[in-house]
Length: 212
Image (cartoon, rainbow, N blue to C red):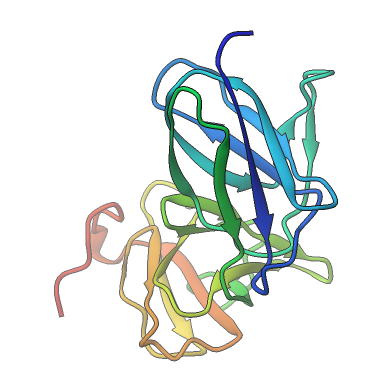
């Protein structure tokens, strides 16, 4: 296959190698996504790729090139997306380093304060979505890794005419009808309670809240 091989390294916050992490290379062209898996030394290497600009993203699912099937590779931390330009003849790729993160629990209720099950949430951080994990003992509670000192959005799966609002657990969170914006200056605790209900007054949930 024509193209250029590219190898890099993935590390934790202390600079130690992280093994078993799947890295996806994606570009704006019709070139399919390519995947590489880090080894015991944290090293990953892509099959030959055409020159161009790629987003390198650690992901929790990848396509096994030998079988074409989808496999899981759970992420142990939060890793940012990196833009990388692949030039002809170059052989190295960026070092992808874990960013400081913490675990956040999201409890979802309806407008009567009753638990809402199976309302998945996703964190948008530096242009990439990170999924949440249901907590085994309660289907209305989810866990997700979030950055400690960088802004991020929490997106929710909602139905037409619904919106999400902050309820309790921290300072009020600004947001839009389907997401909440969290910035470092907000005193976010380890658990947030989120209300998913019909938009008040028939407001379109996909338009911003009025400015305060």
